[in-house]
Image (cartoon, rainbow, N blue to C red; front, side, top):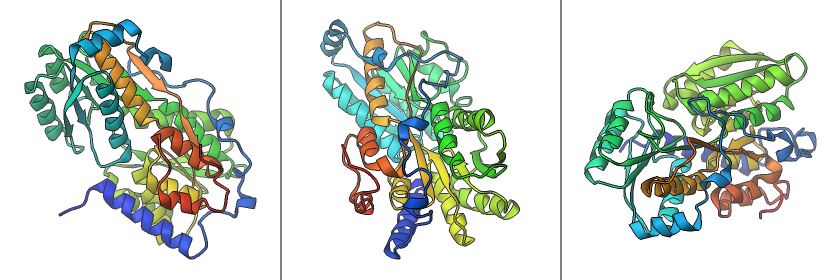
Amino acid sequence: MKKSIAALAIGTALVLVLAACSSGAGDGPASSDDPLTAITASSLTPTEVLGTGPLGEKSATVSSSELSAADLASIKAKSIKVGIVMQTMDIEWSTEQVRGIKDQVGALGGTVINVCDGQWDTTKQTACIDNMITQKPDAIISIPVDDVSMAPAYARVSEAGIKLIFIDNVAKGLKFPSQYQGMVTSDNQGNGAFAAAALAKYIPKNGVVGILDFGVDFFVTKERMRGFQAWMKDNRPDITVKVHEFQDPSKAGDDAANFLTANPDVQGMFTEWEVPAVGIITALRGQGKTLPITVVNVASDIALDLASGGMVKAIGAQRPYDEGVAEANFAGRAIIGSTNPSYLAFPAEPFLRNNVLSAWDDVYKSAAPSAIQDACKSGICGPAK
């Protein structure tokens, strides 16, 4: 059976990182030479949410997702039914989103009736939406594979009298609050800015950095790009930024290799999530090179590389479990006719090597995997919470 893109990427990264660890050497400079060793992760993050919503709206506060006692009682009395439609279930971000939603729906006295995986395919996700509508949930929580081509399917949700909460993006043309009742995400611009601030520590004056950019009009990845590029322009205008697009995540390593071959002057790399980051690591290893890499979206493969002193130097993380809890609260509130904010973004969670264990606790609400803990035995990762 053909493995998923994400599974292949995670497996590749774990093998590569563990091989480096067993040889006693990471890909980055020794800790004493690492410019981020003594840096507090929070000092590199924005002091406020930078990104605005798909309609240009300012983020509500995280506390806006909390339920009043009256709302909580009304929701519990409804025994709500919720359906979940994801873009993929092959990454930890998705499984944590679903875990947060399920836990909170259960706490609200409701039931998640089904979880459907769109598998990065608009036809499959459209079928997910249509099938979910026939199951007559009170609300559907979903992230679009494509915000344009999926819009007609999402429009059918409100036509069926079902409430709709979006994750990360809003299907084009849908109106708030008549066709959807809120969107929850992370501060993707803020995560991009953090990744830029961290990478800049490694880049000399008048240096060059590369970006491996997802060449699809996907709201959250473009927000990460905006945050990264804006920080560089405002804070390190001496750095030349070169951008190379990829279309197929499964071929990101090939795109990275071609870009690095054509641009040997690149001194550091940024990309928008863990799968292309693994592609960059693979490409660099194939060329016998090491470069600092910063990335958005934490997963066990790149967190292990970070903890091991590998090429990944910083990760701007989302908070998928917490966002899932907020999405469930938004769904419950919409079902009883209460009002949600149109847009809520959770602040960035910064990962450096010196805080990877405590940051993992924050994001995943559990201890880091044993491989990451083992890589941290030198003590440089700092204590867990």
